[in-house]
Image (tube, rainbow, N blue to C red; front, side, top):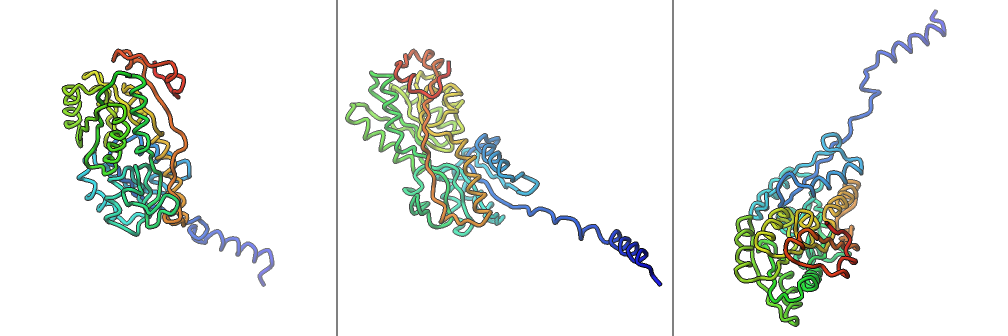
Length: 326
């Protein structure tokens, strides 16, 4: 006869010999997402996105795999890179810039796409509207088209006798045509001549600044563009070399030695893009996630550069600034 104590011992022994895997937690699901950028690597904007993902609990290599593809500033590479990412069939693809978003949309209408920052998503035909994007794309929109007249106004305040201004545009970026048009409309009543300068590469930027100097351009407005965003050091070098004050939306350009910026924090946009990715991974549809626009704009001024260019920044402009580099 088996006693009650003997039965309990046998049951305990049987339980201890059960396979360990029956008690262990299942491994976490690895979520696969893609990231396409026109910029070169290493890319601080991508790192900001990855930081945003980490803050939400997604750690690359642990519970998420991020497939990064970068075009090194060559827009003609975007279609092939977009196709490569789509073939991997990720759950979501994040991206930066209008051109990259269009390249992705041409290859998939089913995989959700989150745009970390782009100019005029509606005008480019990428989303139906900001409130109701429709389709498979959502994200954040940079208000650069509306800021270009403000850039002209700030330049004229610092350079009151300016009669010519150049606008650096990337012909591969469809939204840059609107930037140029807005600057021309704002410049006409002021009697300021606008000099359009196209650049797709570092070499074309270098030649473009030299041409602006030869044409006696008083300053340069750098249009919002994903390729230009990564060229802050070059913009600063060419600005000082040719004695051409610059302004755009990129704070990084001013930190590198450009004169002024007025715009949004694009790195913060990339951190915010992670929240869109998280919502989609949890079941939300891009069509139901309104495109967000910034509410805060920062004016950054580099007084060291102003001094090197022989410019005096009016006190009222300094008072309005969010950051002054001395």
